[in-house]
Length: 222
Image (cartoon, rainbow, N blue to C red; front, side, top):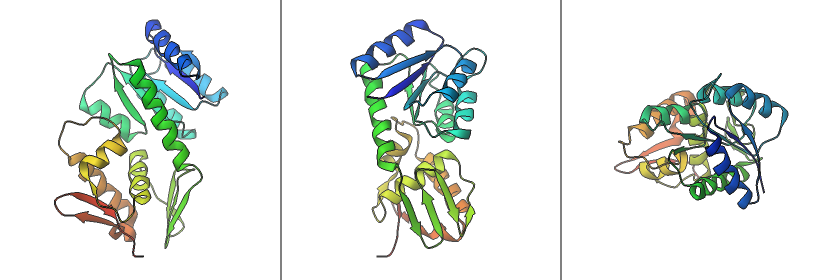
């Protein structure tokens, strides 16, 4: 059982999500605008937040940015806006999943379970490779004692690759596991983020190896 927050200005949407959350034995709070959502988040400990983009007073992307300043709570965007830019922007600033309206309540609850399970796997795990330290609980990366300036999605990507170290990962697999949605564009998204991640890892960029004709892997000598 988890404690959820649904943030949406449409009452019917909140009612449907609440109904299915209760069926799945979750507890759920509701907010109908961005400012109220932040007030509730700052005074409650939520396990997952379901967030619309088009909100009164403060839009969903702005709410997400404020959340990520202080919390690593899983956030699922639930929005009628389905443009590729919106999805990529959401993932870059720290969303865990993106569900388009109209949506299946059962699928939404399944995705809630996925992000909650993922957080359990990553909790309280620190990886160290020479001077590269990855704290999955605090979601921080340090290079030779200096905190690296990575975007939330770069951290997601690095954690996923480290957890699957020495395994060749296709671009399609990375998109599915890290971006966690059905992606119908080209795979330059992965290539672009790998390029940025390598740059930000400095002298440890060589840990990320290109697998010709397939994708990438985080390679560590045994």
